Picture 1 (tube, rainbow, N blue to C red):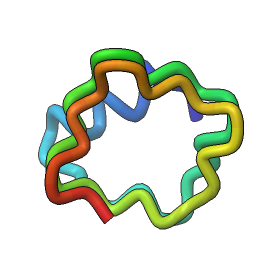
Picture 2: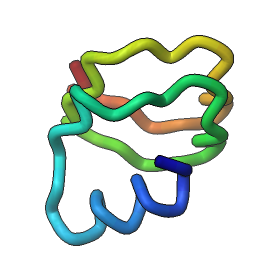
Picture 3: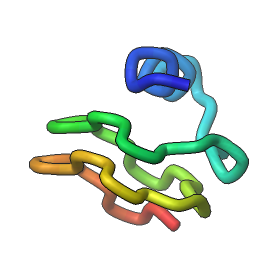
Picture 4: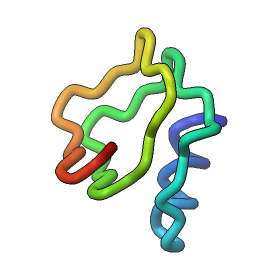
Length: 55
């Protein structure tokens, strides 16, 4: 799943991304407040990302 798909799902209220591979995904400046990431973020770009309350 790429960043656009993740952000589109988040915009519709989806918060559980625990089974989604986020390896090398670019989430620069993304707002994923209270999202459940619970996955590997190896090589992910998170510069400026708002992950407040994320797990």
